[in-house]
Length: 317
Image (cartoon, rainbow, N blue to C red; front, side, top):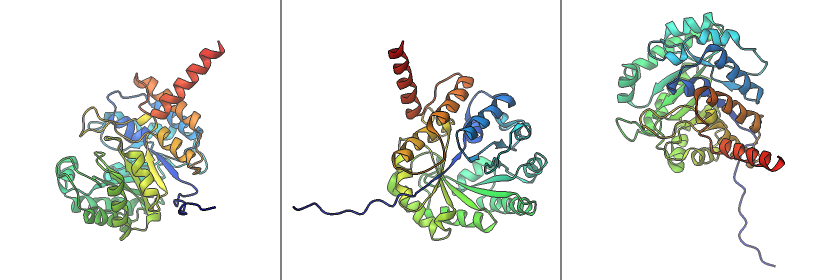
């Protein structure tokens, strides 16, 4: 008996850590601001579903991001759990001071790989922004606070188009040098495709070990899940996502934004990759928050689960 050529199974990881960004990156892009109590309950539901890293908010001026006002009250109202972290975005020393007063134990800083994006987004050169974040990171670490870094425009810029991978690599390296324990590579406008995503990870891995890298894909062109699958082959074991697909893509009006956590989890579950997250509880958290926002989840998996539940309910009546 002859058989076809034998292939080596793909090197899927045994486990993946999901970083849930909806309470910060998701809600800050929504038109409707939500009460502190609703934001707290949302985060608690996400933790109940098994997520262990949940962005809780940001310490930016409420004049710029009113949806993130009162993040100090959100942190104060959370039931802290063993093994669960609640990072908050901190753009400068003033933000760090607020985060420390609120008891934050992990912060995040953002830098862009695109010079034009950095200038238009934060009115600063990339170099100057990194210098400012280095000061923030040093002060945070002196207080025993963990620091996570993000690189924006890692696969494309709304102003410059394609971004040099050497720039992505250098910014990621600078973030690690200043003490970030992990760097998330963000496809801000969602133009990445699987091979480009793989090449990005390989380029950055020349400077930063893959064990310290995460990815953050937007689903603007429907490529986010394919991109995640591609970089799992490269050794990435941490993925950012947003329940219900919360958060738009501000540079592509009407387009999908963040990768939906339900869709990511459905794929990882299907591959036998452990996450510790329970899909039905996660989907319920998505329905909870989108109900308060007055719409339905963007997640395809969440929509399918809801339709199936409705059909079963109708059959049982």
